[in-house]
Every structure is written in structure tokens, then in C-alpha cells.
Image (cartoon, rainbow, N blue to C red; front, side, top):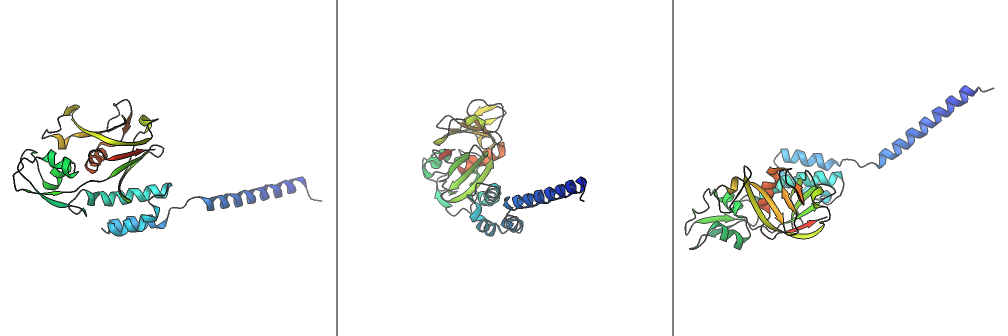
Length: 248
């Protein structure tokens, strides 16, 4: 005659086996980290960024963890090319009489800070007639995902850069399309005039037409999104005046 303890022991063993089977089955449904991500990181270390970007294209618009990592790797590679003379649309501009950095920036859709960076200009007023400048027209748009605390920059279907938002609560209720309306610079808490020689070394703040701002300091209030200041300064070089911005 089978004892009650034997029956209970068998039942416990059966339940453990079933539980293990269910757990194993569930685990098989969990998203696995694609091998392409590690391959891409290896390629970047080997200075084969273009190959890494090509490898990650199928994951770029994925909404999960793999997509986020693919965008970060791709952005880290592409932003270096977009903010350099190696940009595919980089061209040479000859300074004419009456030109200044700000006028050229507005006409050519190249942020004036980027003009100064690409050409090693320290003093904005120091242009000479006939001087050759390398320009990179920026036709990028920014997409902000509040739920994922992510800001990505796109040139058509090309992902240019991807940044983390430190806090995304400030734009609640501001979902939709807008544009970049202004880029301000602050040095030790003091706002600098746009034409200041120190503007290029300032901490940037980006203002959107819908009242939302991107800032690098938590003390800002209102409809402010927070991100690392170094990322924000870099972002200001990628977006020209009136660049489209989508918040969702």
C-alpha cells in the first residue's frame, strides 16, 4: 500500500517538473540579445564603423532593447562622420564681401558653431573675403520618445545620433510635431549673446516652438526635458534653425 508521504513526494516532484518545464518554455520566449550587436561592437573596436552600421540596419527601428542598443552603436559611429569634413554633403564655400558666420549659417543651414568647429575659427568676426570654409548643411530632424527617454536624430532614413534623456516628465501633454526655435548658450549661469566669442564654449539650451526646452541642468522648471550637457552641446551642432522635432 502506497503511503501518503510517497504520494505527496511524487506530487511535489511532478509539480517541480511541470514548473521547470513552464519556466523553460517561458524562457524560450524571452527576447535574446542578437549576436549582431556584439559583432557590431567588435567591428567598431576594429575601426570598421561602416560595416557595423550596415550590420545593425535590420534592428534600428525595433522598439525593444535590441533596437535601443543598435541605435546607440549606430549613432556613436554616424555622429562622428556628420560632424566632420567627411560628411557626404560637405562642401567648400568662398567668403564674399558682407558675409559673417551668422549670415552664412542661416543661408546654408549649417549651425554657426559647426562652421567654427569645422574650420578652426576662434573669433566669429575674423572672416576674410576669399576665405574658403567647409560647410555641412544640416537637414536633420529630432524624434523624442518620452516613454523610453530617448532622443534620436535622423537624416531621412539614416540614424545620425541617439541620446538618453535624464528626465522626460517635463513634456507631458506636448506630444506632436514642432520645430527648433532657438539655441541659447550659458556660461556659469549667465546667458551669452549669440555673437559672443565665448558662445562656442557655452552650455547649450534648445527651445522648441511648442514651449518645450532641452536643458542640461535639473534646476530648470516648466516644460523641460533633461539630458547630459555634453550630449546637448553635440545635439545643437546637428540641428539647424527650424529643424523638425517630433515628440511622442
